[in-house]
Image (cartoon, rainbow, N blue to C red; front, side, top):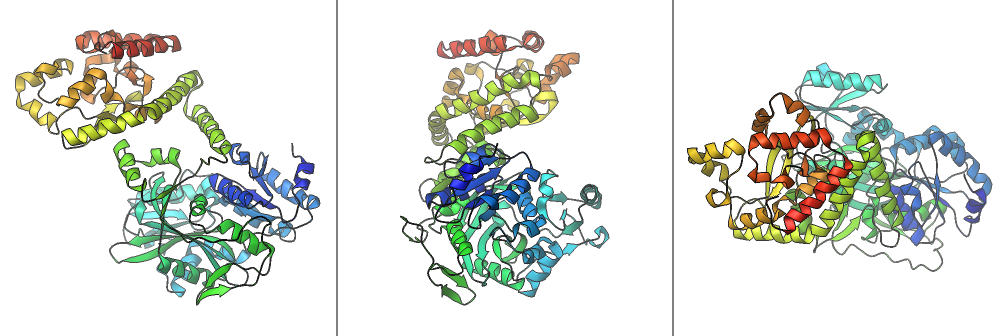
Length: 605
């Protein structure tokens, strides 16, 4: 229920800022404007987005309700509201209703901008002003070779209807399949040359060009990771100093008389040493909060420019700084601009975990940033924690609703909460163990092995490495020892030449299993279940293999607390199948309790 009187009270000394928020980009905008005491109103379909203390939140059901709200709002305010969005769908909504909104709102967008939504016009405009662009083809038959990217030619709101923004096609058959999918959604498809490189060769320039052609740069960022891993949304970014890329962006916007906010994505080709324009988006980036620590005050300055035809901020045109006239400051705030002192790392940590290739790569990627960089979290803000807390609620709800069957929701909820708690509690210990392994026996800290998961799907299981690097080679050299190992996939510690000194301790205390909490968090394993097996072991289950694989494998289980290594394989099968047939929440709780008992009593577990 919209409280119009509460909204009317926001109409104070300056124009109301209205944010159509799709995620944490909108929350970051609300936080920046709110800190400058700009009255801010947030509209979103997501609960966590409207929970910032810096804005009055209004949750809506759909885009129709947004349009209805925006049509009524001018009746309750005396000044034109400033309209922002961080979402392609909402930006499309603004353009669709331009005739309704243009006389009542100020927004950093213009019909000229639509020219850059068309890939052909975008790349044609780029080449006309000396900016490199990839080759693009409308007909599959024109493609000179594969692989290529197939993507929509026009508006990017397709992301709300499709699970991918672009399709990586290795052959003509895959390209035809992608074109057919886009056509079924009434989207025109184009095939685009792939610029060589990976995610870290992607750079994003965020600029604002006002009605006088003056440019306000927010900055340049480099993508570190994205999810999904190919052509997905960035999950971590780093600020970089590339003034030549800013100039290329300025030339692009000048070429089409672009007006408003522009997020220009470039890809760097290491072979040629040149940047290629990939796309231009006309809304606030998800990672817009990265510029909070650089001192640019980008969103606030865009707001000031929109509400006044003159201002005191310094903009940058093609020929250098342009000093503009004065603009009223917000009472109580000093207008100080601090140049960036050191790079800023922006991280959407939850999705960054999903984007990382392994636990080790995630840790190794973050360690270099801890001291020389400033960290800006996408969700967390100590002065405004509610969006972060409500996002965790949203995340759990989404996981349970979309990926878990009703009868398994409680078990999955326990897995998520249990693994998150364990990772938080044991993270210092895990860091110490990793350092000891690294110093005592050079080689990988994490042992990774393919195991069979639910319904036989393979996944990579993580453990702290407890063996020497060439363990498999050492074992196979002794045929009798190898035959004994294969009979039960176990050897006594005193006869196993593979286990390191620190490895024996880790195994006896079960500390080598700690990294598997990441497998549990990802949904590949459960806290309790049958022990995940390698493919060769499945033969031991005979015609019951499918039943065994019908239950998600566990970090601990009935076999582990029933004797584990002392139980030979035929009896192990019976113990595991008992759990498969009788598993329930009470049995899981009993197994977890017995696991703690075994670990603390140093029993085989």
